[in-house]
Image (cartoon, rainbow, N blue to C red; front, side, top):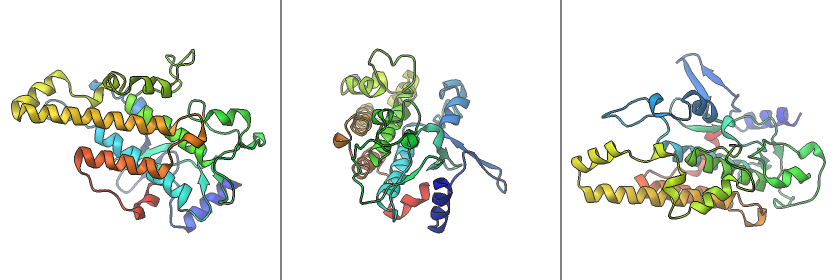
Length: 283
């Protein structure tokens, strides 16, 4: 019932609710989720990259992934702070992040979403019925498991885990995460010195690329760019870690997270910061 009301309300506001898999028949364009793309390419395996040799790999390089993270952060900012009644998504995960033909990310599947009146405390820890026990294992915050109601801070935890997964290519449910080791702690322990050992290797230039870069431009400039990449990766993981802390009161807010991700992107490539009016376009 709530999902239907949410769909109608978003439609009235001019925001399109996206299905899990959408086809644009006119241009034969398929919208896929981040999870589907990850699975179809066998974890972005080098053999499945579109473009090799003199062409850069075309599947989710550093900037692609950072743009996806910014798009999702912008969507959450809109849902939490710019709707007449704040909306809690409740199930933020890779399969609900849809990518269009321009690699623009859109948050989809509002089947578990909840309206969240502004009069309620977003950090409330009051017990609730099992009606609120929603989400996906690994992405849902720990407090949901003990009956705590869905809140915007729950979305922030999910966003933090999603951000860490995008850049480490490790799922929170991977077999390696056991005996108290979680994706959050795994990423936190690597900062700052071991960051290059935990991020997705495909984000880093290989030996051949380093040699090519060194021969085609100033080696000093190439080293500076590698250093900048490392600094940006450290900053990104810090955002993911700050968003996915267990205590809601200690979490980074989505406004600050989005601002920091924009800053990181500008630092790396000088990409124009998107305006507030673009937030709703990612839903």
